Amino acid sequence: MPLRLIFMGTPDFSVPTLLELVAHGHEIAAVYTRAPKPGGRRGLQLQPTPVEEAARKLGIPVLTPKTLKTPEALEEFRAFDAGAAVVVAYGMILPQAILDAPKLGCYNLHASLLPRWRGAAPINRAIMAGDAESGVMVMKMDVGLDTGDVAMAERLPITDNMTARDLHDRLSRLGADLMVRAMAALERGGLQLKQQSEDGVTYAAKIDKAEARIDWSKPARAVLRHIHGLSPFPGAWAELENARVKILRCELAKGSGEPGEVLDDQLTIACGDGAIRIIELQREGKGRMQAADFLRGVPLRVGAKFN
Image 1 (cartoon, rainbow, N blue to C red):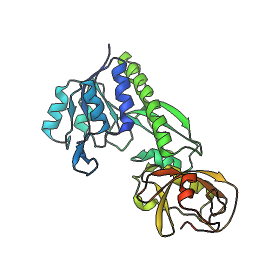
Image 2: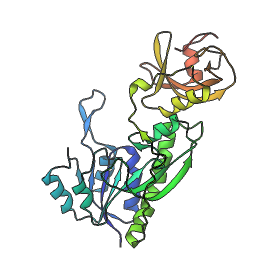
Image 3: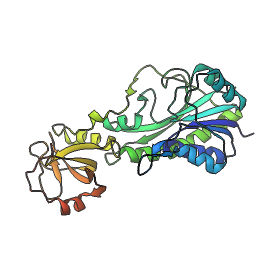
Image 4: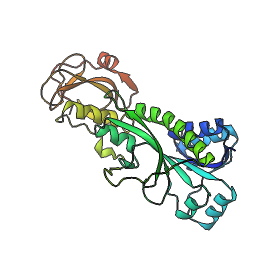
């Protein structure tokens, strides 16, 4: 029999899992998501989350509580009489009483190979750290920060040409399939759980905008991974002729020079060791553009400096 589930999620990363659960016949009793925030062209219109938009199209009841820690919130949650809850990037802490409410438990889809990169920004941190692989895991939640027992996992190589958005999109689809398989196993009573190792624990702290400035003195691969780990948001940046430029995509290149120096007419930039070639970038106040388009509007001499 299909499961009766509560789904809890907020950003676009969460949407494929919701859609796949519905497509596989599970009954979604309710969707919990974050409250709409001001947005739109003038920043005045309330913008529902991607999960809320998807849920409303499916005709699923949507709740946006500010807290889950009140008796009223717990009573409302319990009233849905769900067998389990599926949590994908919800963005709110689930107290123990909520975790205990579904008789089969609450299951989180996490975008890392736990225990590496517990916390808020596992996709960005994996790329920025130069990791060779990432993945998704289904974990039975407890009150710790991503410390619950793991049920299932899928791995994915990280290549040098992957940005955070690229990895995000691939893990989102991979995770949706994994959670569907996990819920099928839970439905059969065959979902096996394994305690996380305490070896290799790392924490993926939320990205601070102060981290975004590019340090050209680092080796080329470290610069590339920093750029790709922050693309498209918040975007790694450097100053060129007193204007901020975000670099969104690049590749390793041959060449050497002073860190930040423009080496040729193809936007090859020297690093502390080696060089990168910029593929896509964004000038302050402008849209993202290819390097060739940028150079048509901003011709750079060899020897110019990114700072």
